[in-house]
Amino acid sequence: MRIGIDASRANLAQRTGTEWYAFHLTKAFFQFVRPSDTVRLYVKEPLRPEWGTLPKNVEVRVLGWPPKFLWTQLRLSAELLRHRVDVLFVPAHTIPFLAPRNTVTTLHDIGFEHAAQLYGQQQLGPSNSFKPWLNACVRLFTLGRYGATELDYHRFSARRALQHCQTILTVSEYTKQDICQTYGIEPQRVRVIPNAIDTQAFHPSVRQDTARMAAVATQVGLRQPYIMTIGRIEKKKNTLGLVQAFIALKKNPAHARLQLLLVGKPGVGASEITSAIHAAGLTADVFCPGWLPEADIPALMAGASAFVLPSFFEGFGIPVLEAMAVGTPVVCSAVTSLPEVAGDAAVLVDPHDPQAIADGVASVLADPEKQKLLQERGYTRVQQFSWARSAAQLAKVLFGQ
Image (tube, rainbow, N blue to C red; front, side, top):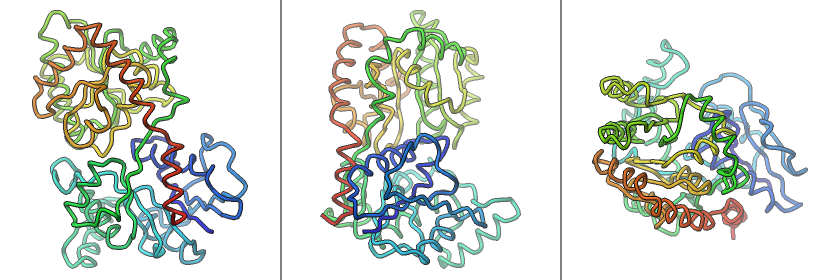
């Protein structure tokens, strides 16, 4: 059997949740490939070192020829036309135009269908001069239904995947229900294969290396105590709500030394977030270092007094499990998939109420017994998720079982 996997996102240098899902799930899937099978990984550039040594029946196809834009629709489509596969797995919802009949893809969430204001409206394209031309072509091709914007790309890609793919994967029961209700899809067409974490990087013993924890915090400019989050600095992640909650916390003298770490690139609404930090006079206590080396994240999480994810919309929320794995108390939103992922091992708060977020964090910071309880529950919760178990489910789907 010839199995094609779009590994372009899995091979990125800087990965967010979708990219980590693609990377870890693909690597874990290799152990379920039969000797008679061939796996082809399609990438934009040579594999990064963290892939390690691949099994002998895994091939790498570097699709690096021009043009550089529309890689999925042009280069991957051309490769699939020339060298056919029996099944194609795309770990995100953008499938190529010339995808084989047996294509499986993952819809991580469809927040763009419910809250368009949280997503980018900027036009896509490799250059400013090319963007209007691309937008016009997309408008013509789709009979005016879509433009070449980030939001429309999400909407078009999701609908085409649902029309073309017999099986759709997603990462939580919440998102499965959302997909079925929003698009009128039969539940049997949607399979849930949950995310997990890298247990070699995130584990309880991380917090025992206090020297490492102190060193990475110092590199960023932090001192304890601090709280943190990870993800794009944007509206969807409700970074502004977290900053407003932090402002409320700082009004209490008990939290005068508290600092806030925001790890991630700027996204939609980042300028408003920066303005709020400056207006509150908290530039010395809020750190926005952008993306940090992945090797530093476990120690930073372990050193935090709380990990906070007050997101408006999440398909899963991998960082919640990562924080639990290193023993850090979690405060997260009580909406979308997060209660399903966190279970009883986190403090759940209303993301639309900054004071509620602040109160949730304060309840953790002020209560050592609560911290210990959340830590113990977090360790137990993490055990319920495994890339190996998820890859075993993926294998059943790809092999038609």
